[in-house]
Length: 347
Image 1 (cartoon, rainbow, N blue to C red):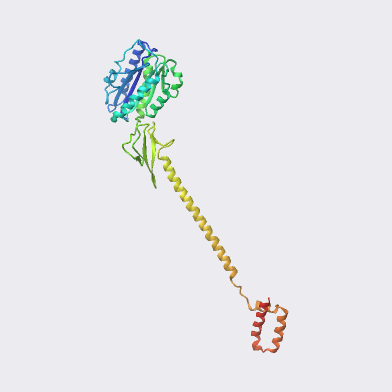
Image 2: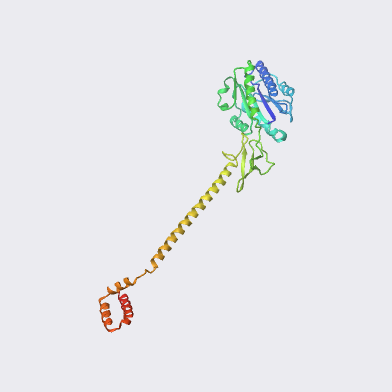
C-alpha cells in the first residue's frame, strides 16, 4: 500500500501535567520523522492529530487534508495543541468514537484514499468510559482494517478493555528513545505488510457482481464465484485480513467444494447404477440358461427305449408276446411302437 494515514491521539486529561504533555508532542514529532525516513518517496502520508479528556480538542479545520502531507506539515499538525489547567477524566470511548466518525467521513468524501493503510496511535493514561461502548468501537476499528497502537502510561495496561490489543507500556515519556524504538518497530511491521484497508475487486476466477460496490474492509458485496461446471453469487464481507469471506471461510471456497462434492456424488451414483444393471443382467442370463437346460429333451438311444419297453406294465408284455406270435416279422417294428405308446400312456 502506497498511502499511509496516521491518526495521533494525545492525552490532555488531569493525569497529565504540562511537562508530560510536551513530552508526548516531542515523542510523536520524532515518530513522524522516522516514519517519513523509513519509506520511499512514492508513499503518500497524512497525519491527523487530536487531544482528548472528557471532550475532543481538534484543529479548527478538518482532522487532515484530502491529499498528501509533507513531513513539515505533519510535524506542524502537533503544534496547535497546548496544555490547559482545565482538565477532566480521559474518556477513552469518547476518543475512539471521534476516530470512527473521522474515518467514516473521510471514507465517504475522499475516494482517492479509501483503501489507504490506516493507523491509530493513542496515548492512554487511564481507562474511563463515558458511554461504556469501548469494546464495540475497538471491534469496529478492526473491522475497518485500522491498525491500533496504545501507548499506555501507568496501570491502564491491566484494563480488560485493552486485552488483546497492541500495547506499548511506558512508565513516562522521559525516556523517549526506548519508546521511539518500539513504536517505530510497530509502524515498520505495518508498512511491510502493506495490506491497506480494502479487498481485491477481482481474485482468482472470481469477481464482484457490481463493480461499484465498495471494497473497503468491513463492507459487504456480492461475489460471482466461478466453478468448473457452474457459477454462483454469494454475499461476502471484506475482512480485515484482506480476504472476502462468507462466514468462516473464503467466499468462494465453499462453492468450489460444493461443486466437487456434486461431481463426486454424481459419479458415485452413476457407478452404483452401472453395478446394479450388470448384476440384473447376469442374474437374468443365468436364469435363461437354466431354463434352456430344463426344457431340452434328453436323447434316448434304442437300447434305452428297448429296456424301458421290456420293463413296462405286465399287461403290455403279455400283449406284445401274443402279437409277436401272430404277426409277421415285417410288422414287428410297428408292434413295438404300439406297445411303447401304450406303455407310455399307462405310465
